[in-house]
Image 1 (cartoon, rainbow, N blue to C red):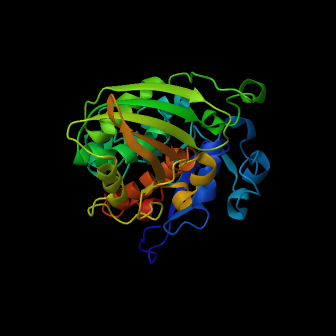
Image 2: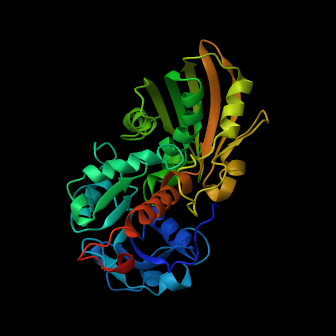
Length: 358
């Protein structure tokens, strides 16, 4: 993990959608976090007022963190007391609620897809496009201190890490992506065991349409992307088989070196959730695999292997990333760390309380 300044008092944050699988991962990742402190959990009105530990159907193994378990579950539509909000809300709810929270002065880091392609919303993968955070200054609520940032789709998060150094070094003219996506990507109740056991489903609603536009927004490109997505009986970990046409020639060894050497830009501040090496390059002929490789850097690094020439394409490779961590909760948390450092320390307007308490 990257080092941060632990001398500062931890900033209180709220998690919306805290009972879902992404919300649960956020709750667990915030336990013992060096700079952020979970102070509020919220979900639907149905179980509001109950202890989080009693209301949540915990699905991650073990038990909810003790401090989180004792928090009262709030209603997601009620304004949180914390200035920094991590949203794991469904997109339908997020579409209206998240801008309203930003309008009220909150800094919202969202995992929802509702605002990812909005022109003034940064779609952040901090190691790839930290400069995109400047887009938040164009948001209509920015003068009041509100911000809204998003992390990408769970497949795109790993793809963006893997394609960024290749785009920077060689240029990418086109990409074809075939995914094998884990069942947890559909949420706790998204797909039944009878549907997926011993099966592969060659369609995920709305998924193929997200991959190209989100990748291009993050990379700052206009690359033609063809995508075919599949749901497979894997618990965690999305696999993407990628075929590229490059602007400049590159051997598999050249590509492997560019991927191995990739690091976050020096301008990015140290964020505790981000590893020093965001990409792990595997040389074995049968790696990466979800079962063996999704835990790289605590789930925050993407693993790349099978880098090879693949006529008529110039290059092929396989990318595996943890859909629940790098592709969702961990990405949302890293963005919140980035925003908290960028905005809360320097914004001390006349109606702003210290360290984001509101």
